Length: 350
Image 1 (cartoon, rainbow, N blue to C red):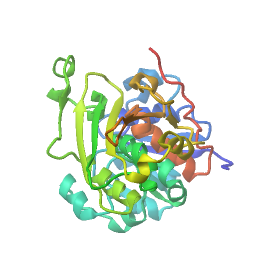
Image 2 (cartoon, rainbow, N blue to C red):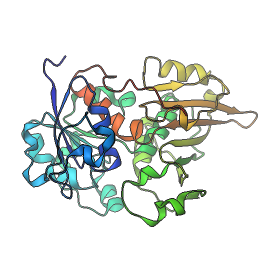
Image 3 (cartoon, one colour):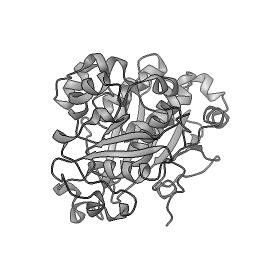
C-alpha cells in the first residue's frame, strides 16, 4: 500500500468529467490534488467556477504551458481527443502514470482511430502498451500499466452487460448483437451547442449517430477480443432529456448451450465480489436514478420466452462509472490502493 499521498494532476479541469474527477478526488484519502490546468481559466480559483467544491479544493487553475506535470505521480486527461497523446511520451519518460478519459488510447488499431477521429496517432508505441481500463475485465492489465485508455461511457454498459455470455460462448454470433442505448445530455460535454440547449433537448428524445458513432468501433473491437471471433454488432445511441444517466438495452440470441445455461447464476458468479457491478434479481427493471452520482453499474436479465433471445438492461451514471469514477477506480488499482477508495458513494434519490 502507498505510504504517502499520490500527487494528482488533472489536465482540462473545467468540463463535466474534469469537475467529476475533482468531486471524487477531493475526498480521496490517498490523494493530493497538485495541479489542475485550464488554458482559458488560468488563475481562477477552482471553487469560483464550481461552488460545490468550496472548502474542498483550494487550488486555482494553471495555464498548461506553466504546469510541470512531471512532478505528479498520475495525470488524468479530461480533454478533447488528441491532447493526451501529445503529452504522453514526456510523462511516461518521467515515470508518471497517465489516465486518458478521451479516445487516444482506447483503439489499438491506429488506422481505425484515425478514420473515426480524423487525427494521426502520434505515439503508437505507447498505445501498444496501454491498457483498456475496465477493471472488471482487465484488472491485471490495469495494475501493470503506465497508461490507461479509460473506456467510453456507452462501451462500459455494453461490454459489462455482455462479457459473461461472450466469455463462455453462449451467444449465437450468426445473429447480430443489438444495443439500444440512451444517455443524458451531460454526455455531450460542457460546451455551447444548439442540440443540448434546454429548449432543444427538454421534452424531446432522439436517436443520433445511427450511420456510425465513435463508440461503435471501440465496442466492436472489445466484443471480438472477448469472444475470440468475429461479432456482428448494431449500436444506436439516443439523447434523452435528463442531465445524468445512461441505459443500454441489449438484445442477443442465445446459442444452444446458452439456452441450457442458468444465465442468472452465470452473471451472479461472474460479478461476485465486484463492488461496482450489481446483478439484480430476476424480473428487475434497473432505473438510472438508482446509480445517479455513484460508481455503480446495475444490470438485469430478461429471457424472451420461446424466442431464444435474451434482453439485458444495464444502467450507470455516464459521468461516474462511465467516465471519472472508472478512471479513479483504475488509479486505485494502478497504485495498489483499496479499489473502492474515494468511490463509496450512495446514489442520490430523488
